[in-house]
Length: 390
Ligand code: KIV
Ligand code: ZN
Image: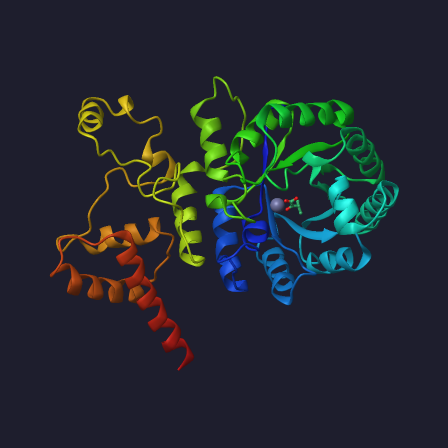
């Protein structure tokens, strides 16, 4: 399928390593379950050498979702690769993702190595990783500030050593779409069908999604991205924005993914409740205001015909059609549904407890906002945890 684009989700790795986003192993497992439901193709579950928690998370995700393609990150050296391979021991479809920086600036100041040394280490790393799995991805860190001839040379070398995917990250979010498309196009032509060219864009200039899409138009067939665009510094390309751009503009972007778009909003909400922050209110697709119409002219047009001011149907990304206010007249069913949309699976006693707390407040208030409902759910789940520990 020439237009099939693989989505490599790195919420649990690049996303998790950014401030305010660290997750426990059970939290990663809960999110992994949701990401599998969402339909991501590859789940990067951690960087096993970085910490015991990352190692355990990769083990747990591989064990729990044997049918999923699970990736573990490793620098291009033996201890990292052995640790990644060990963490992936239960995975049925393990991917070792090994990387080394290739730009002169990183070589000179960070690695203090020559281009030849880096090339040799990259090849050795891929060869070692291939002893553990057929599915090896190589990333040339800071690819967009790397000399293009050298990048082509190292890409050929790692593919000859057994890499199936070559990822060319815009590590510092420096590139612009036209330039990135030219770089990716050149590497796609150079590698031909020998490997999938992948992209991984950071959002320092707010161009991560635009760069990723331009790269796909130039022939890339894997995109690395995260839910809500979380990730190092300004974050990574947001999965939901890429997917909805493809879905909304098939006339210009005729690309296929396996994402179940109706799962987008609840996945975003689950992540927001797991880490310390959610998407900003005006964030595309998943922000609180993404489908809110305030201006009179807009409301008038919208009420006459939704498509005058709305290019995406809220329900197509799992946002409840009407912004239903949950108040004292709302029933248990509506509350259960809202909890699900917010990313929580509650059992019967938990729902009863939640309903009890909810009605006590709803009697006094006009309506409860999502944040207030989440707060109540946390109280209920806290109670459950206490009961379980007694
Ligand atoms: O941004 C980056 O270059 C990375 C690599 C490890 C893929 O996260
Ligand atoms: Zn990154």
